[in-house]
Length: 232
Image (tube, rainbow, N blue to C red):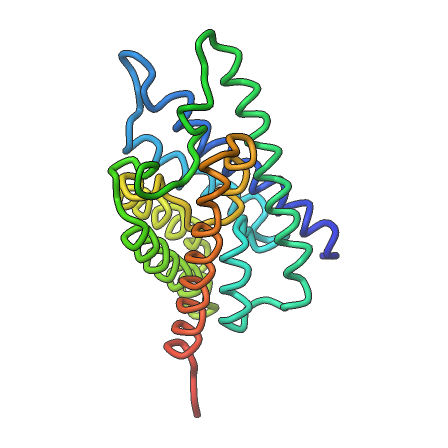
């Protein structure tokens, strides 16, 4: 598949991830009487990846995440030369989804960006008031394990056809752990979309949600490359 089509698939897939995941947080998490809460938002993020993995996994690999793409390069599963196209497409998809979400959310009287539009943050902007250091460690460790599971479940030696389920459930678990800490990123594109709409504090704290997931992804990619290496 040519790079243009693969990048287009990544754009669409990342759009779906941000619209589905952040949309559930903004529109449905606290809806009176039937709000889906932390569990529902966590599941929504997992479902976006699961559904897109079956839809575009055979086209682009369904990274939907600059950190995943970089981690797969570190793990020897992806060409470094394709990184710019993938990352640009992922960020565009995330920003477009955040803009659509903002348009929908602002259609309700009284809506305000003060709620953060599901932006990621630390300290005063952490849902649970967690420190910068706690947020950084959480994002590094959880992204590292995300890459380990992605690489392990997509290994040619793993049972065929089940990788999307494992990856989707992993993202659900990651959100269950870290929504209180950072509102969960593990994905620089997902963080960038809402931050560009919100501006202010969300943009000033965005650096962490690029740096920490990328560090974690490289650790996970390199670690699985070592673990899974077959030597004669």
